[in-house]
Image (cartoon, rainbow, N blue to C red):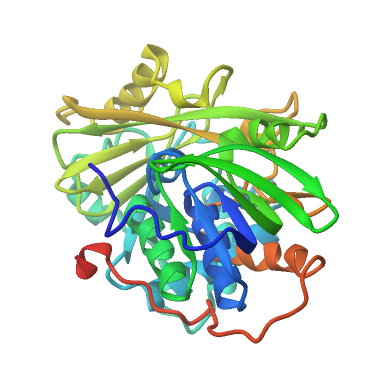
Length: 399
């Protein structure tokens, strides 16, 4: 389904202070932040808004409870703060929900450790904030947990996080950027860029043919294509990254109106989530090489996800309605993907600012960090808005 709204291209000039390549959540967030800060901005997207990774996530706005295990406390705290902002600023696109976390006799984490983690989660959310509440589900209620297997079940915790439609959120942020004066070109392919004393000369190809645009700062928010864009800018330096595929499937049956945080056979987290009357299940971590546009779920990934659901919900109908995969961009390492930092990484090369990593939930905070890099190359402008309080609207409301 196309997510274009209105005219695909609103480009009116050949010079912008900031040109952003990539119409995913981080590109849209960068454009919104730059426009709010008063910069003349152009956002370029080759396919469609949120076409790749930003429409293939777990659809969660969350702190990342599992990242407490790897000591990423700053990331968790930042994500929880941003989750709360989205619940306030985008009520049409973000809603809180209860998450059930069952612990079995062979679970990797003892109940005391989960209690400690949820206590820290609550502290980061704010002790007075109702979204920080959690509880231990009494044994008398286990039979009401939508067919959850209770054999060797030791404890069940319930806590709150939030859900969204990632693609609609991306378009809403893009629409916000446009309302602040940002212009767009979509579909438009970034072809190449050359650096000069006054900035960057950028060639793009859209429905009108090849255009040359000048900009002072070039933001590379192209996700899995980040090194491809760097190469098209004439740089021989590439970022030390690895692409990790995450697969999701959508079951025909809706198992629950609430969410479940399950521990898979390899002790990874697998989420079972309500999604438009069905059930979204994800995700996996599979190293990926090849064309980022060609990512597809593998048979092994689907088997892994189905086995996890079957183990926890033995009576559930596992008929698959849909399946999809997206790519995380992580720092290259021999460590498991789970153990690597999820913080956004930046590389500033003469005003070519490339970013990768980061979380959907923290896109706005990432864009604030990006502004710090932009301001090293451009004088400060008079801000016209504050993204911390800007409302975001469901894109359908504008059509």
